Image 1 (tube, rainbow, N blue to C red):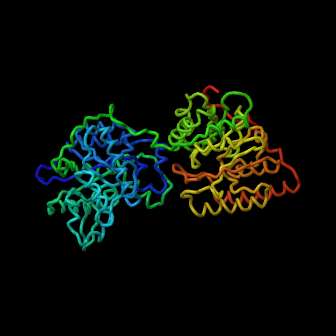
Image 2 (cartoon, rainbow, N blue to C red):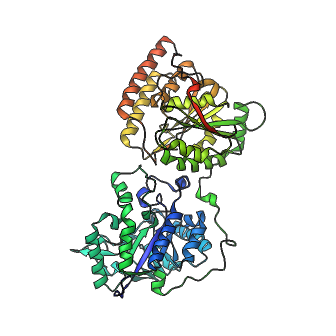
Image 3 (cartoon, rainbow, N blue to C red):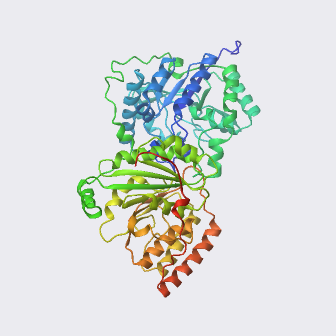
Length: 583
């Protein structure tokens, strides 16, 4: 640390995970957080080690959700002498909450953080920064609730130009109550305020220019420079979420591999401390500790699915005769999905817990000739779990052929197929399986049903899918809204002997077409299709469009001549059993 510097500045750290940030708020819902690989613990430890090397203390703004998920990491931050402050429970927008909801969110996050850290919470930072005075009602509530400080105002451009003092640390007064505000630091250029506070701006703006701006603040301003960064910014190997624009990807991922070196320069050059220490405040130890405090039910952080026992019992009578819990097999085709396997594993764990009471679940993970580490990841993740089987295709044969091989390998009458990327929520099987009553051969998920929904799927792709469904309705007897969904529940005896000409995405529609021509009964379950989060789609768009047109012509011909071909058999023995649990 440079010894000739006398100014003390403020360092703040956002303790959250890579999937929490505002970059992904429109595509990643809090109900999906449990699915993602959690990396905040190791990233926080890396951050703590960095600060220890320079002897610097900071304020860590933490989500209440993080405290409930991993109270141990909160204790470690406190143990190393840093302050814990609130960032709300979930990563919610201030403008999306009413004052009542804001108070409730404050209370829930404060309780979670104090229970985990054992110290009073004095400060707050909004998950999304405020830009104009219409949002300052939140400061009034914070003052009423007894918070000592806030650090959420982000002067930008011409905002607060008639109140220039709001650019620096100041006290906000509301009905006789005072609260300190520590805005993010900015640089004034021709009357416009430019952000220089750290984080994303350290990674996007030219480093030499930014360093000069910060140095000028240090020389000329009496107010402390307020710097921030996120713990996930020290994690260049974090999973890439592709369901956002190119601009958002640049914002999230650019120069992550340089961030630690950038921070080291500032930590070496300037003197920093946390906000409470700067104000001379000490969070009082609380009587309640993690062991005796009331913690929020962790299930509140996950989706709670209503499992109507009467409905499920009815399904038992209709689908499977005899006593005992119905046996259900879930087939999961995987092709070059190494990055998705942790996401899949967390989702499947939740699915097992949700359906365990009603169904005896078995899982078959089909590696479709992957060329990456998918097979290795499947083995490491699922290989030692009972009733989990891993099969391998020697070569890539396509998603439909792979699903059909999984169905043939199964020994249960009820078969479910799901996408490896979980773009349909597999928890909906609790509602879909009971629909496979006598006389029904297949239940298919339908996002294009009037009661279905699509989230963040590109408009051009949505249009193509709906057009293809429109055309299939003209060709086939059963008028469905969706023909191309891989998320289905099958009656094994109705589909195991089908012979598909098309093994890839076309085969998904061909399977329904052949069942339709056979006279099988197909029904739809309206559900939500969300955009793929991790990895990339394997679909070749132009090839698939042309293929659908050929398939429609073929199905129409088959309908006219009253025939279903059987010459496209795929020998089941070509599938290699790689690893299996007890079955």
